[in-house]
Amino acid sequence: MMHRNDSMFETTITGSLPKPSWLAEPRKLWPKWKLEGDALVEAKRDATLLWIKEQEDGGIGIVTDGEQSRQHFVHGFLEFVEGIDFEHKVKMGIRDNRYDAMVPVVIGPLKLKGRVHQTEARLARAHTKRKLKFTLPGPMTIVDTIADRYYGDKEKLAFAFAKLLNDEARALERDGVDTIQFDEPAFNVYMDDVARWGVRALERAIQGLKCKTAVHICYGYGIKANLDWKKTLGNEWRQYEKIFPALAKSKIKQVSLECANSRVPLELLKLLKGKDVLVGVIDVASDKVETPAQVATTIGKALKFVPKNRLFPCTNCGMAPMDRQIALAKLKALGAGAVLARKRFG
Ligand code: ZN
Image (tube, rainbow, N blue to C red; front, side, top):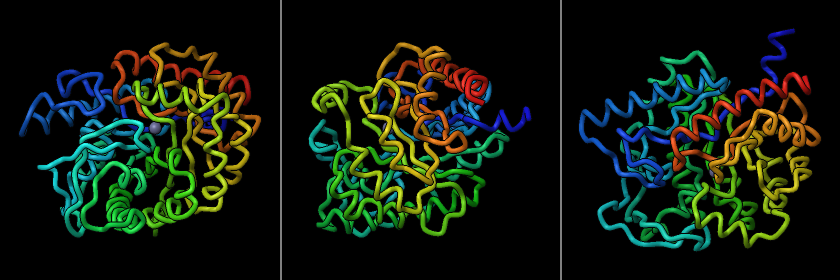
């Protein structure tokens, strides 16, 4: 009985956590590393182990490497791909021109240089008995975060990346990873393309995988450009309504989304029938730390539309650009809130 109760509302985070200030510049989305060479390799390793321990102690059931080894969730993958020019980055409006970023350029056929995340995946696997989740950027979001002078077609480029993502995902599965999650914030921006080719590209990326597969779709990190954009979306955010039907029909097993402090009408979660839902119960756009009671209340609201055994309390989005101590406090609130929810709704 105890065990059954414990496995309900298993917690996880979206993926990223702040990097310690001795590893990279704090509170930045594209932080510079503080070290180089062997010292950097060592520091990434230390930070990964530190966050695994913090997640375990915070009561997180499905842990991640906190993305401590990559500078940014998209470019961390791209650095391992041949056919991309990182020397001459160009300024590009991304997420439908919500903000500008300096992005690398596709200049030739894409090919993986080798393994992308083997070191940190094997490290994490060797040091935790918890379930391990690994995150990769989704094909559509990559295409939206890179300039292209070779393929000339977004869909073609997305499928080229999906093949590479699939190769790395299969290898991560062999490394012992339990869940592979693709981050697709672009799904909330280009809803028509999601139905046309976005979900198909995602299915190409998970082809042949036997482990759990997930997609994370949010309204972005808590940075100013995103907060300003959210203000333009009106009283009800219904983007999910346009993309959930296609996702519900897809082979993806889990969907991670934003629910805490958001204007997403929760009845939209009904559209994900048959999927595990990673419900965002921690707001990453606010430094105010949730109480366990608030977390449990958000879980209770989602419970009206998601069956108990399919509900996984999670963060709204990655916590990479947050203050480290606040992120840690939020991690603990997530764990404690799930404990409370098990008592309330178990
Ligand atoms: Zn997100």
